[in-house]
Length: 475
Image 1 (cartoon, rainbow, N blue to C red):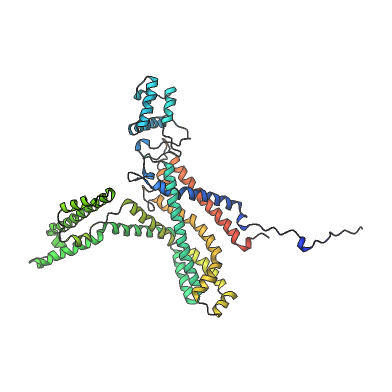
Image 2 (cartoon, one colour; image 1 turned 45 degrees about the horizontal axis):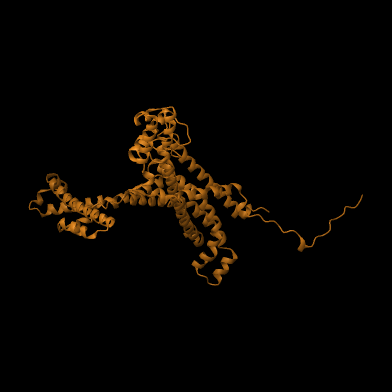
């Protein structure tokens, strides 16, 4: 047999370089998800200053007229009922906007008919000209005439913000708790992880609901001071009873109050008189800031007369009257704290397992041997080696938090209307589905964006797991 010829050897210096792939580009789905998330975050969070702002004290997401209610998307097919509503919108817009009124009158004058007759047409060249005046929102409007595009963007910003904040909170709590348990070891580790096991056994969504309801009750009490005011009134009734000469004739405070109901009414009337004075002064100062006229305000306050002697004491029991925007901010904070405060259990277990495997490594033992303090070991040696699992878990925790916020808002426990989120927008859209006429766009678009965002976040999480997990590295 002829001897096979061996290829000539190639010097190592002339060998072609080994091609190494970028671990972050291994997953095509992860790259597509990342691109979609960048666009979504830029559109929703970047537009918040525009959608939350507004004119005349009305935010843009809440601006609209009921006459424009339930208009279909601009690109969707319309029926006769939609045409009637669009014509009514043109009539209402002409009453508000001089330019629309002038255009409408010009079209009617060119046709030689009245404005009402023109708006009653449903075919012909005049009807085709009137189509140019129709309000055609891109994604339609809701039952109050508010643009669904604006509300979906605002709701997306709120849902993404709550999801990201709740995920960061759960990552911080879980990382700290799991790292401390794993590094301490022994009985401390056993006790801390038994607490995690007990919390795991409780219904997860029930804990979130309880925390959200409890937080809402605390905010309501902070705003109204109802419990504090009730306690003060009860104490004053007892003082009134003890000050009477016939105090011994009453069995208890309830009997005294039943026989003298005017005592409670008198105390509460004094409190609310102080409350009205506080509101009057607050409104005067607000107008002074808007109009930059401090002197007339001082004169106006002087005309109100001196404050009652017990003004400062009773003022502590009057309602605070939080603004709608402040109350909405408190509700959002309570919601992401409730979600993030109970979703850290899995993170604690993951970090604990990683710390248990890392703390016996030679570099950790060397750091202990040279006398490095515990905080330095955590900061310089443990945490850098935990970055991979933390990033992957945080990416997978964001869709879970967004889904929980949407579920709570769908039930009416989360974000309160009129502030939109994808959850309460879906709840409002669900009621628009009926056998007579379904306004499908009110349910379709919030659910579509929610589903695509959750899918993209899971793709990104899987891509990061493949990039950061050494066992998945391509050889």
